[in-house]
Image 1: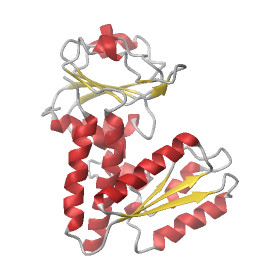
Image 2: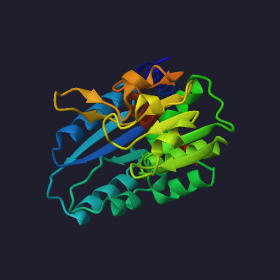
Image 3: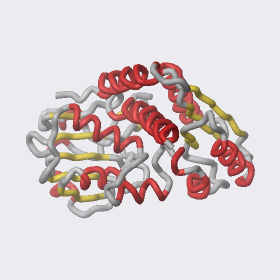
Length: 278
């Protein structure tokens, strides 16, 4: 069975739009883009369009490639103080002369809708989550939608980035799964995956995970998206062979990607609600 991220995200956006329609003030999301990287520009445009679709107030802020660290931090601080803005997102990756960690830590954690601030990561670690990293949270929504009880399931996460792998492992652990975290250098990776009831892969290597590694009936979540020489897109899992073994699998594109943006909107609404209740 294919896990249709587009359809799940569409329903989530529709639910958000209905909630927003009842509000006196529109939730506000500001997205900062530094430079003119084409892929980042597409992501930012998609986020801006999604905001408009659900009725959010949206600010798309473009900064020059040569912006200084101080100037970028000043922009973040301006948005921290802006009452129209409930969520702040700085599009990553940033140019190499900028310190992304310092920028993320400068965001008010209550407006950190990416869920990357150390305070929000710490809350997730303690199983007291507030604003959760979007992609892992989106994956959890997908698993809930197909009715998976993760209690005692053997889950393997391949990839240990701060954006996906580490918080994904914590999400699964908080759901009472048994979690193994691997990476592209893990020895005998195939044997670990063969034991997994749920596999989540986010390493950025096209078709690295082979179909014959997948346990019969496993659930496969492919977070990777890689552009091949012919211009087509592929995930980190060899979809054509893995789908014969898996009970559920996400496609690339159309799987996790749409959920990440829908979850960003969900986080922004959560941040709005928390601010309004104070």
